[in-house]
Amino acid sequence: MLSCLRAHGASVVLSDIDSDPTHEAAAQIKSANGEALAVPGDVTSADFAPHLIKATLDGYGRIDAIVNNAGYTWDGTIHKMSDEQWQAMLDVHSDRALSHHPRRLGVPARNGEARKRRQWPRGRAEDR
Image (cartoon, rainbow, N blue to C red; front, top):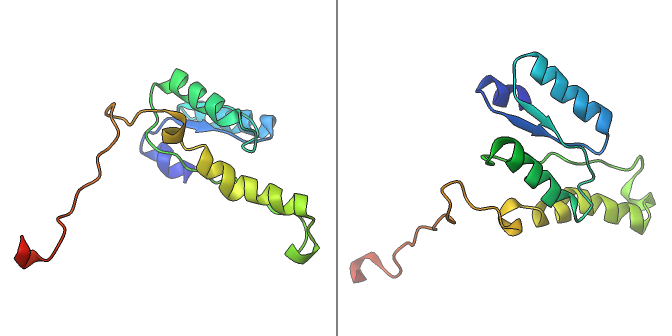
């Protein structure tokens, strides 16, 4: 996916819990004349998403798209996991991914206002 985004000229922000690979990937993109920003951190930390969003806005001024592919599994089967291991997986795969959405953190839509949902007419067509 990153290759596709870069092929279309996207500037990207990379994040991972491991700092070295994050910075190495950003350096590779830059060495190929791309735009990349490395912001390592832990997606399960409540203060990380605001930090990541601020770094992105400071670096590029806007957010056009988000690709969240954070995830991992414990090296074992589900029936052998502890409650803590199970909760850690839920935190990465769903809880944090959904709670850290930029709109929930106050980042405005690209046009400066929240997008309006289309209001479909109610009732039967012959009644309208």
